[in-house]
Amino acid sequence: MELRPRTVILQQRVDDLEAQLRLANEISNKIEIIRTHLPSAADLPMRARSSGASMSPLAPENYLDTAQLLQMQLVSRVDPMFGSWWKTGEQPPSGLITVLINQFAMQEHRHSHDPLTPAFYASLHNPDPNTGPHPALRNMIFLLGSAYGDGLLNALEPVFLQRVVFHLSQALAQVDRLLDCIEAYTLLGNYYCCRGRQLQGVGNASTNMLLAAACGLHVLCPPHWTTNGTPSLLPPPASWAEVRSRIRVWWMVFVANRLGSAAVITTNDLPDENITTIWELPPAPVDSTMLQLSTVKSLYTPEGPESNVYHDTANVLLCKTVALIERAGQVGVMAATTPKEDVAYWEKFELTEHILDRVTRTLPSIYEEPRFTPDAPHVVLRTTGKTNPYIICPHLFVCDAMILLHKGLARAGNAASRDICLTAVWRAMQVMRKVQEQKMGGWVIPTMVTARIFQVFAEEYERLHTLGDTERARVLLPELKILATTIREQIMHYPLASKTKQPPSLSFRFGRDG
Image 1: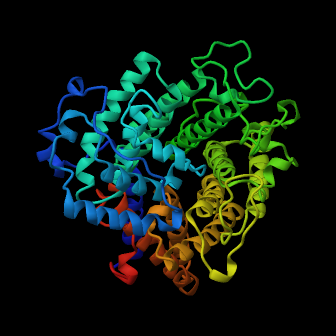
Image 2: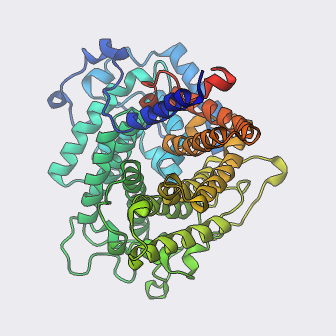
């Protein structure tokens, strides 16, 4: 069989995988029997009536074992699908809440690298909907907890999804706890993306960015921490803790919005130049006039301190690398067609590349423990050889950003850009291999990142094979095999990929099961 048809088929499979990210798919109908018993949104009461004891979430290293144990105990003693709570709008039983909280907490890094506090999780057991987190946010946590489980827990998704949508509409209508509403709406968009409803998820992120801006979350900077004379849906923050909460939610919104823009290469909804919210607050209150204005637009100062990220916390690393992905995508998509005479464009291209290179060179080691506060010490566990989900994403995102910046030029025949893309994917494979070695599962790696890395290797494989350089082409096969394995694992965790009948696995070279 000739190589070209096989490569065309391979590329089509990659294109199909990307296409799935742009299609709005319905939630799985495997739980239709439950759906038929659900009350309408109008029938859902505003007040939950069940009671439950509060609890404190466990340390992260104990989440998995405890969640599995609690789930087994729950299934063996009380089937949550029986009873009336899910029909009447009551809060789930306390034991089920514990399971859902732990399922969510294990995967919280997918949405933010600024983890929620034990006090927040404990408040989810409070049955009073008028105090603590808004019911929209409570049920959103429960929805993601059920989505991250399997079997019995998955069957609860329609219950919590309907409650989330209902309570979000109530929150907006009543202007009630809008910060919780924005956080819930961010998580809902992420849920839609993970369930294959990519267009709806990206649309959510776009709308949510505008809502967050209307609340003044994009201008949280000293000394006033609010809009400067511009009307805002939120009153000025009343405490240091409230400022911190608003900053945390803002960067969740930002990450979701920028990743959505990068996925479909659309213009972002709020330019970097209009954002003055600082990356994070110091651990303790300080004189606001002494704080340095450090935000996304200052990231692009050529030799500024913002692009030296070694001492940044986990969440700042995430936000900066996501910002670079979006900017690289917006700049890179025009590179192959922009004339050299367009000085302003190429200055922006070179600045983006320069900042991206500085960030890449100063990233903490993949063996470093995540730092959630600026004063936390650097702890590198190189001797254990273990990495963690919090550091994986920034390392992969800088590689993805470099690919987005240069792949247009590379495909147009620019050898230097092709080499830069190859350097990026080889760097990314160090992380990919570590994920495989630790059996962390494909879910820790964003699907689009995997697809783009695979594309670069596949295109280089085709180029070398066409040139007759079969030895160098063969060197790429182990990397493609690892990527194919990762994509198969992602299909298990992300229904958005399940429509692809077979992942781009180069099965003609090493077989479907590798």
